Length: 335
Image (tube, helix red, strand yellow):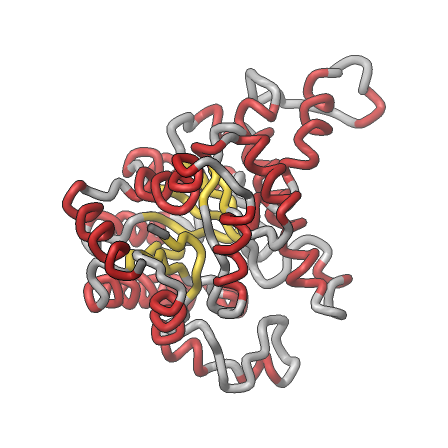
């Protein structure tokens, strides 16, 4: 059985409104009137690949061009649309609310509505929004709410983040800029004490964490060698009681790395119980069968492969026994 953790949908009006990006007036994916992030494409890829359940999230690259009032309207619109799709494809689709963590009281109220009233199963946030990272003090009410609701928070890069002035060529925004921004955001969540202060959070890093599992050793020695490493700069104010690797292992990461050694590094770093299958398809639907095959090629023991393909996701999503029974029946039909 397979649960797809990482697939994107835009509401129809945003999928259609791509002219500015295509004309080069916005930094964003240029769909040329053919935005692939539609529920129809998701369901087609889902069924052709034998996926039992897809978790849909809205990458919302368009959010950076909206003013504060427009951001809130867009977030509310997506929550409503995601709930509609969750109902229309009951048993096959679950939705995450897209939230701007530092967006203020109205945004927090909307986040609570999305979970408590609409029944969405988690939050999707950007690794930064307009140069505000989610460790910002203004985001603390969001983290408090996420911990109280006990739902996963899926953190994903915006179209471009740190160093975006250098990634406009050769598709480097996607291949380099986004993972780098994600790695920075996850690092800041650790050293700025978000997981220290909210220890029961369920943070899921997209794209295998953007390389954080490679650099965590450097983060550990930067913390450990306080006096000896004085020339590296200040480590104050101290907001954590353990080395960064302690908090990293509290996070979950999807398998969207497109490179088996990178996926294995994530698995070896955080363990099998914190590693989740995902494909990031759509938008690039061709990547879904490759993502599935990569997990199978890892030749994990069957019990571990089941954890990666569905059990870890099911636990985070708090799927009921009834939901799991129906999913397993569907998976048996697809086999």
